[in-house]
Length: 238
Image 1 (cartoon, one colour):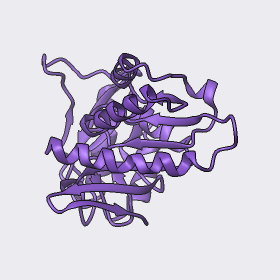
Image 2 (image 1 turned 180 degrees about the vertical axis):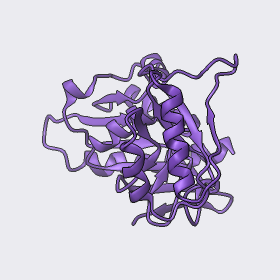
Image 3 (image 1 turned 120 degrees about the vertical axis):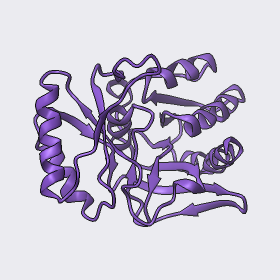
């Protein structure tokens, strides 16, 4: 599986070449760097490009990705310094035929969504196992404020009951069994919605809950995906 993730990351390097070829003279490629096991391969490959002379400036979506990029001497900045990004490359937990995604398994969904939305182009890299006919088999990560946690959970459960679902919600834990805390000092609840038929409607209802900071439905953001399987890498577009 790790080999497939690397193949997808390698294929996505072509997107950098395409975007870079259209830059104005003197403009540096501005790249958003995703978080997770597949994105890690892309950062490694980008580090080799930078060592070979690629001019770029990158915005990481997590402290973990920032540490990896720094170890490879990849130039980093934040969105206040870069402005809009040319491209973001990130992994996914699920991708549906319409290019909608569920992300957040790695715990960086808020920053990943901010960076993706601030990019002209979002490219997803993954193994073929992430391709689904509909979203929802993977539990939906919901980033929440720690204040009023039980009230927020009750509100999410109420929404699930309104949709005719059993409210199966779990607070994400770290390996030490303490609550997982995001880089933004929030917590994550994983909610099992099953087949999500109206992702836009669900997105809106979740964001209406006061304690919800953001959720892992990435809608109308992904423009290209590279999915690697035993038969090679497929390039998907809407």
